Image (cartoon, rainbow, N blue to C red):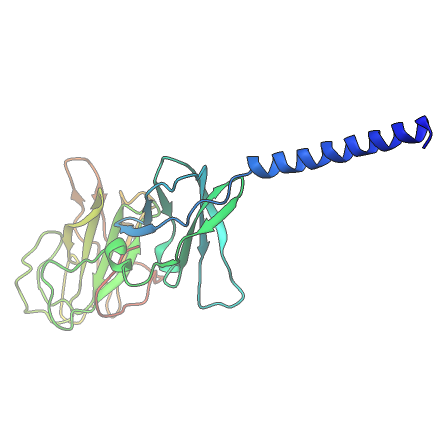
Length: 269
């Protein structure tokens, strides 16, 4: 073997050794994916799913995946949040009534890949997040449930066309039942995470059969109540009510219905 060929073979062997060493070094530097995390889902009273979990060893990032409708075969999981290691929670703000069949998966990730948690479902716990309200003088066949919600989500007006008090204006005698089907409207205000009734309102000349509250409406910020309609008779405005904070609610005739009257209970979202 001549000297030139010998030098060529030695150089080739050295290059192969360098390549193999580089490959081995890269494999040792890439960690395996972390273990699968365990995620818990809790609902909050105002349009929020709260996810919590314990950190998994080796994870550098967590990814929250959502399937908005697990009953739809064409749907699937999409990433909705990325959370750094060490945080351990994420509040997902969504329209809860559109997530009845939603499912969620939390991924624990690092440079080596991701591991999925077991899926968690939103169903079965939505009532606690949506809220539950009743009229202050709830009675059978009151028809509580014609709803208007202010655009900022802070104020709710609910009509009850079958309510039977003969009281007039705001804050009247709720215990009276002498005017069947005169109707009433109840105004609720959200304080923090809870709803509380703020006003009981009747037409200015409440009479049996008026069905006052068959349609209701609110201004965008809930400071004014521009419309409440009686279904059968022309009803003049109820007395204007003024609170210490100068927020006002005013009932007046309306020519268009903002919601169809329906009986039962109301669940604001």
